[in-house]
Image 1 (cartoon, one colour):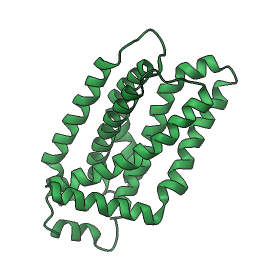
Image 2 (tube, one colour):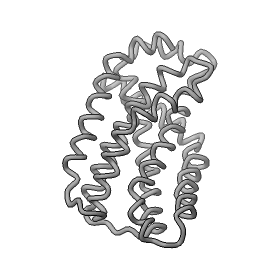
Image 3 (cartoon, rainbow, N blue to C red):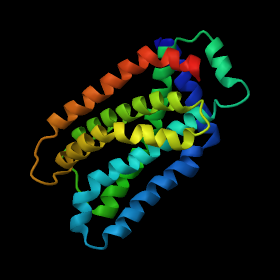
Image 4 (cartoon, rainbow, N blue to C red):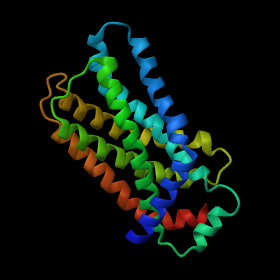
Length: 223
């Protein structure tokens, strides 16, 4: 399973490195989202600083939608999916590989978004370790649930509109827990610890990673 996961993540990342969709399209989109939020909140930095964690995770969620749709769009033609089914790869390995590829892409974008949050909203960082841990856990959870629902909707004509309808409600725990943990890491509000919210992210990521490993095989056959 792990060998197959490495093969899949390598394939997906090579495709993205050659196409540069993340660099040329998704990254500018993420920055534009932060800029629009900054304009909407006005020149006063106080509300901007308090809203920064939530705006960060909303931007990450939008980027996750684009990354997941792109992950399955590259396999939508020329019998690619049939080849994937006949390749003999472990379905759980395929799921973990695609999840890891989306996670890596989102983490690279989050570096850019974090710089944007600090520069645009004037936030300082109280705990870099908590910030990184929260980002990794939240991103892994979003990538796992996104890959799962991306596979579920990929064979349908309305997949572009169905995926957001499926993913957005389920991603609410990540938005809430990620925002609260980021507030603690940035020293915003009265919360001094993000540990309870980090635990929520751990449970969310573990549940969907385990669920994906179990049911991705039947979803792959139905794609």
